[in-house]
Image 1 (cartoon, rainbow, N blue to C red):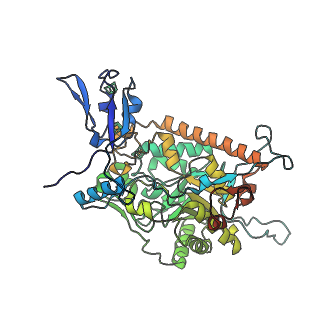
Image 2: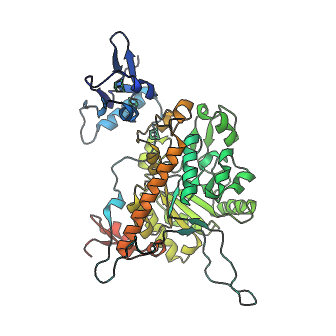
Image 3: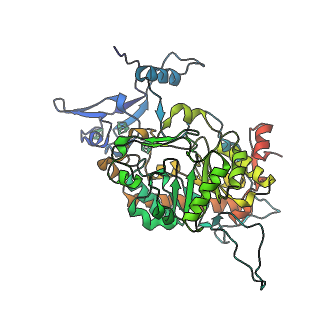
Length: 501
Ligand code: SF4
Ligand code: SF4
Ligand code: SF4
């Protein structure tokens, strides 16, 4: 007989003095936590089903609800934490691999929080961003080593295709299928309004969104879902996904239950069939193979689109990036180990990969040392949480950042980490029509625009404080950074001095 050793992680605390039995919580919770007892005219709940998404808390008209962490504790010790014991019981009960969503929550260093930014004082005056022009526009793509002239001495345009962004931010890959139609529409519209790009992820491009093509990165992943000539030509850039920070070295899996209607058509696979992306691309086992795919995609798009190669940040990332920079790719995207996901094996998400800050610094240095830094632009992602993280990433050598979790939070995500269950109460990581319509794209896109408008102001203020009026001048300018509480090896890899030096 199966024995359930598990006690709920959260408890729903209802203040019965405030509860007016309106039953809104019951209607809002797709996990069926709340239940109305007609006989007693009273609400009750099943705490075990609660994932702490805060939907009911936010919409309770009398603020009668709170979700509290369960006070129940295991007899844990330093070696056997409550979390470890809980996960072991779950696996002993299910016999299955543990799945998780969103980014790595474990207690590894967050290097962005151990780096501080410089400011001008006295000798190198700061710039007032309200009165002086401040340039946040960036151009992504390979830059020529030298200016060429034709026979008449006129400068030849030898610039490979570039992406022009109003600020050094793009929305990272999130596939239609892992997130909802309304979430995709919000991202596409926001990208258009902001003058940046969003990314289809590996699920293809819904026909309704072709009109946002100039603001779209179309992705080609190992499953090749939804990839065809029109798709490749519709985007502003093409991204080859080799890896993802949340699950380096393994493939992806969208269960057949989610492959319905438009999602199956967009992915070009039958309804109800599992969408399995293999761990490797079965035609890529070397940089030469990668080069063939890069040039196949360029050929298919008349050499008009920059090609991005996305990899996870892993131990030898600098060497891999060096190979990619020589493969003909225009942009390298590196995804750190805190990067989010719709679903990943928990052990992989929490124990594989390296921090993006160290990966970025290592890659930028290696490409500079080899004299090939201008062959490619570098885009980094993996838990960029604020404008300060962007400024630090650019100073460490990034041309641009990818954001995903931050964008979802702007859309209403409450980081309940249950995307893999497909019942997102905020209408984001779900395909259930009643839930999808909870996210209004009109509101969603405006919130995204607000977030990045605010970040852009903050970036300008920080640049002004440093006496820098162009984001390009900040790129790789590590003199603007100092570390706090970092050891010598960490400072060496980051290429920065300690605070006080
Ligand atoms: S939403 Fe609030 S007031 Fe309404 S039934 Fe639930 S707890 Fe009571
Ligand atoms: S799962 Fe979300 S909506 Fe349901 S009870 Fe918990 S916090 Fe409320
Ligand atoms: S997208 Fe939805 S399911 Fe995923 S973490 Fe956010 S609120 Fe939870």
